[in-house]
Length: 266
Image 1 (cartoon, one colour):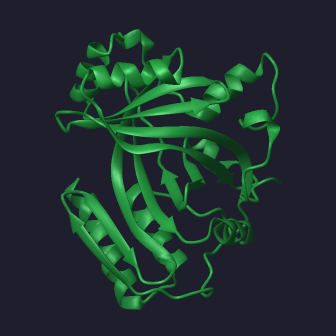
Image 2 (image 1 turned 120 degrees about the horizontal axis):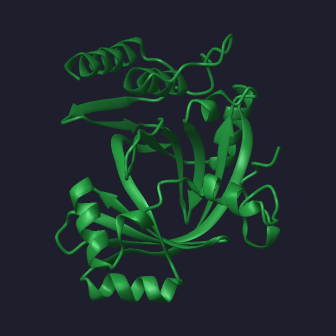
């Protein structure tokens, strides 16, 4: 762990000293944090736009602040589960009864996942996503998950000003959109501050996601009336692929409509 943090810190210092283009700096950070490898023969660009940046490393979390067209980024260990519920109203009542308070009101999310033509990220259990939620847009990388009753994986995330431009950048790098999915999400804070619950309304059902420390997740799931066999660690893409065997389109969207301005179709 110490050696890994040392490598990450050294990569951050080099990125600052070299004044690398934004994409090259973010890519170097991902390589140091989780071993993300570039597809063979593909080099990140040396142009497009430069950004001033300040990078802070503390207690295993990396925060990246970019001066041009970007918002603060973060690196963290994601620990979560999904729980299937009957409907959104029942989920809200269940959370409020346990003292959860609303953090972010229900809003629409549009997501596009990207991969190399060889599907190298998918085969490695990794994910690269562009998300639009309300007025905010995010670029997210997730590392492979490990075994266990909770879904645990490294997450690197940075805010972007223009989702469509980021999609064009990813295309220029040789990445391809492979899956689109939509949902409505509302976010709730736990009364003890130990974690966050979200209510996700998707085309394949309604889910409550619990994110926090493993012991908090187990305690909260039990308090909500769920047992460990009911934990779901699959991604929405995996859940949709399973449900699609009974029929359905390529993407997990409401009514087959397009993604509200996200030009992610192949």
